[in-house]
Image 1 (cartoon, rainbow, N blue to C red):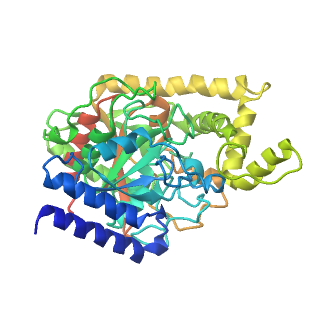
Image 2: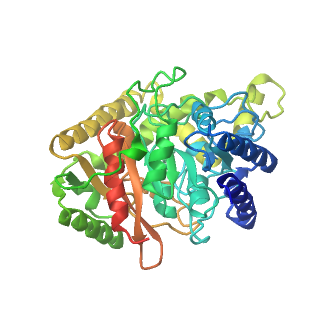
Length: 461
Ligand code: GLN
């Protein structure tokens, strides 16, 4: 059979599998006919020998990334009928490289959450065990890959939202350096922290997807002009002489012992292959959650101001304009989003700005400085992705603080703008996946991917 016939068959199988796994609640939209006709077009390109680097690959898109003509909700009722008039830059780049866009994936509302239970369209269930959460907020994207429906997916990561669901679903997920990937067309949560990134079953597919989406975009002034390396072809290199730092604050209390044991085991294997393992300190780690939840909520309260029932999505009735505004927001936003808007508005308010927002910005600098100091000594850092394995649906819903703490090892990277990748490294005794996180220097995604590929080789598949 020719490769394009195989491709059409693969797409049909994926559509059937998506139907079979409907109860996992992965997709918010799946336009079957559009997918079929895009697949035909891609096969035409394959036949004529003009196909791009992602031809033959199916890619699911987090519903925070806008797609022209396809409803894009960001997991929120307030956008439930929103049809964007243009494509996000990453979507344009996927299409230019002949990827098959395969559905929009469920997520925590406006990407606020760690378990996907904050989606206003119902939670995603973990494909490895549907009693458990898939992690959030890009849970639908990670689950689509883990369920075997798509080859790859795009997520977004503001404080861990790619790496955490990747860890919880047993797949690979990367948050690139801030500015590596254009945010144009990403529905904003916290603009100084948000970054789009790839999720896939292997490090090499993550590298391929990153190559396709990375690079400067004139529509996003924060996107970097730094050249995009040929990531997928730069993955060979051994770890001999690589200096790997273990941040001691990431190995303390509060992390499951099984996760620590597994991460340590792999560290020993890397050492035996010639890597130099060095303990380092990131002393301001304990402030990262508090700092993140001040800065992220402040930015969110400002970004979400635009949803007033006038320009986008849902509009409630009201006797006067102010009532339309307030009713649209009261009915359109879910509980967690309202909590964040209130927190953010509070920390930015006149009497509290200095005590909270300004202070958080100062601490953010200290957190970044910790990394700069550590990176004088080591090439990259290695730690768990999350302090726990996936938890059961409903387990943390009554305790927002417990939910926030799940991001203890991920938020610092966003505050510092650094790249990080989560690699699946085996299962706990309960059969739940464990993720190992590597953290790199700014724009050193190549080094990060190489090391991730070495870790991947150490894990029996
Ligand atoms: N869980 C974190 C939050 O709720 C991070 C979310 C994200 O990265 N989008 O804000």
